[in-house]
Image (cartoon, rainbow, N blue to C red):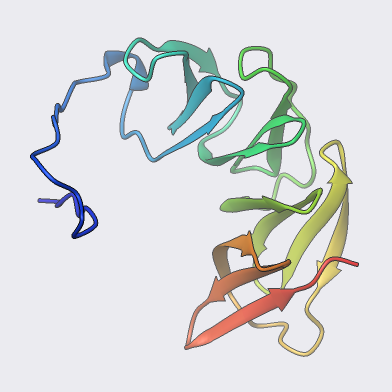
Length: 169
């Protein structure tokens, strides 16, 4: 069972409500928010909502793993090398990188998207439709798991006590 942790200076009890989301078709594995729209990631579909309560399902061509809000809309990623960009969270385009890759995560910051592929590589882009391979030559066996952008750098977690730090130029 999970717990909701709030800062010590919060007063009163928050209203907490757990609702079923029948449209999910499985687990709701992540939620992104931007431009007044929530995008939730579930197996083989994305869910879109303006209020975070009523959801419209969007079919996806593969199992989707994560979504991120960017300056130009959203980017969702999934198995079989599928990134899906959207300007508004409602209309999605399906791109195909490599069907052998499962894109497990996406991070965005400073105008750059980083797609997490897995062993020793990530894909980077300033244009969500054109990605370039970034091979981590010094650590080709580093299993990259996911990360985020902050302090003008991407920090991506990896197995066996390692992180990968990318600084956009």
